[in-house]
Structures are given as structure tokens and as C-alpha cells.
Length: 192
Image (tube, rainbow, N blue to C red):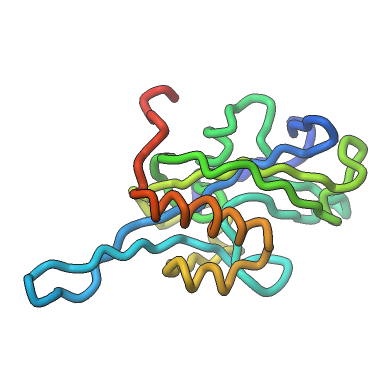
């Protein structure tokens, strides 16, 4: 059993110009492939995805919907008592059971959700702030471990398995471009 507890409810959710603000991340690690003839190994980037609890396909740690007492609650939003970076790190811990450092802001990715419609965003408009998170620790216990399965995938595998088009876009246009540009860290984690 995990000592960590996932947040619930919407009373602290942030909204801006009709968009619900979401925080999320693409957790990643390095794996070394087979040794080459010169005794060096290829460095392979793997990203961590989690199963969706509402259908097929895989997701990055972000929003999810649960039913409690027949009312719908959403988690994954960037809440009033935390920074966007803190929210992204929290989601990685709660949903995927990983801790690490945010190393790059990948961008904002708008999407429309039928399940996240409410009085503040009647059309279900959301804007996700996505980050790259370098994983330093995989937790044995985390809040959603009974509902979530972790999968480490290569970038091409993740693109193929990604459930939502906006997450695929964050992976292809945000993470993959950053990867091709040398994966330079742009976030100072000492500021948090």
C-alpha cells in the first residue's frame, strides 16, 4: 500500500480563457543496446507510458476520470496551490509511480474532452503544459498502482501506441524534436 494519496475533486482546478489547465509529462530514461565492435553501446531513449483506465491505448501521466458517489471528478489538472512544474511531477508520481527531474518544457497542447465539460469549460476545452521528465526512481508503491500498468517503450513504439492525438503531437513535435536537438536540459530544478 502506498503512503502517497492521489488528489481528487475539482474545487482547486485552474482555468484560463475557457480552458482547463492541465499539467503532464513524458517520463524517459536511457537504456544501452548491444555493444558495437569498438566496445561502445548505443544509447536508446525509452519513454514511460501507462494504460488508459477507460479504453485501449497508452497515455503519458496526466488527466484521468473516476466516478465517486456517481459524480465525475477529474485529476491531472494544475491546481491553485501548486506550480505547473509541481503538478507535472505530482502526476508522474500518482499515475506512473516515478520520480525524477523535469528537464525541458515541451509546449502547450490544446485538446477537447467530452468528459471534462463543466461550468468553467462547457465545451471541454483543455490546454496541457507538457514537460520531459528524466526518471531517477521507479516506486514499488504508488497511489494508482492497482489501476495502472507501466510500459517502457522506444519513441517509435510510443508513437504507435499513443491513445490521444494531442499526446502523440507532444511526443513527435515536442519530445522528439528536443531529442533530435541533443536533449539539452532547459529547466533548473534548484529553483523549485
